[in-house]
Length: 456
Image (tube, rainbow, N blue to C red; front, top):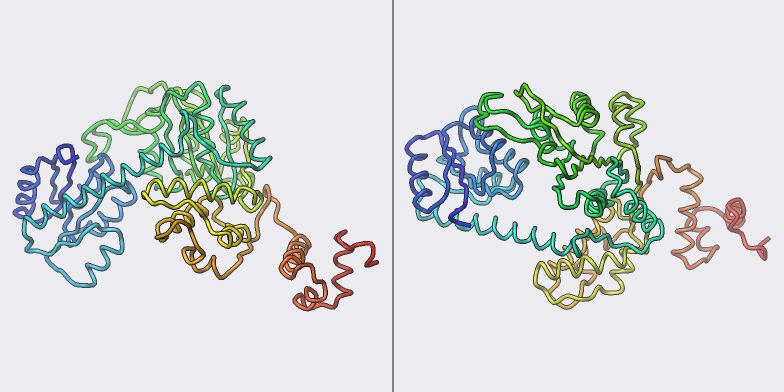
């Protein structure tokens, strides 16, 4: 990786910048240097670097702003902070915000060389892990969706049926339910499977950045646009573009996207001639899109263009039978990634997971298992390896089901059933916990159709 590594150096002191550029070039790296923090931001928007070395104190745009933008735009890039005003607080702040290392001036060039090598090694390992994850999540060229829930199997059948039709799809569901995995599943089962698949979160960018990300720009379109950049729409031609959190897309972008869908062409920023594109759009949202249409924040005509087929992915709490099988899938995945001989999940851990409501859905379950694998030094994940709040609490959440907010009666029934389950069906004890007498509890159960005949 060393011969191909791309390094960005930012320092408003010319002598320090020249020294660092000289040393890094002698190491065989591709080096870009600038004395301006503002110019550095433009370079980060336009190019990808493996390591960024930046001065902390600079006018207008300082090192902390460079660090923040770099983490947003390129999460796999490592940032090394250099400063002549070293303090414990500034060192802690930079590391806390994601810097790889903190170097105080005057620095030793050998020290900087070594830190850059270590940063590049971390970048290499991260990229290898990403490749391993993709290998684990892909089976015979198809995305693997793990489920034994009947409703999920029906969804997969629908996804397989619509995949070859090339129609646009709108996927809804809570955050963490696996909307992007479903989008990949549709892509890999479509006639576009050999084409590219790109994903973009519409809520993660400012309007200007999202426009540049989707549509790209021509050389000279704005100050600092040194080269032409293709947008994701153009790059996804002959493939699929997944637009996550579509309801967060600014109104101006919605108009441009609608035109792309209708005319099958797009215009880069600064261009005079349109570019023909052939893209399948799959959009997703964790919001009730009808509310966004009513409020005027989302265009109805764009909704109709995207919602040719709609899929709703239920939350994990509505498909509890998947918790066990997913837990073991993630165990196998992260044991492989971390090279650990862990093959079991303790029964009391499974019991806790089954009783937890998972407001973060499958993504949260994956994080819990990943943490368990990381902390375990034995052959199994134990209760001690779980997050503290999960060990101590059984969290219940109030959820919308397909846009319907549960009534107070619905919640009362759920709570009564939960209390009865916790006390093994002992109605006298359940009534005491609920703060009512046994007759009142019987009346409530009768109203819900749960009272047994012998009680009447």
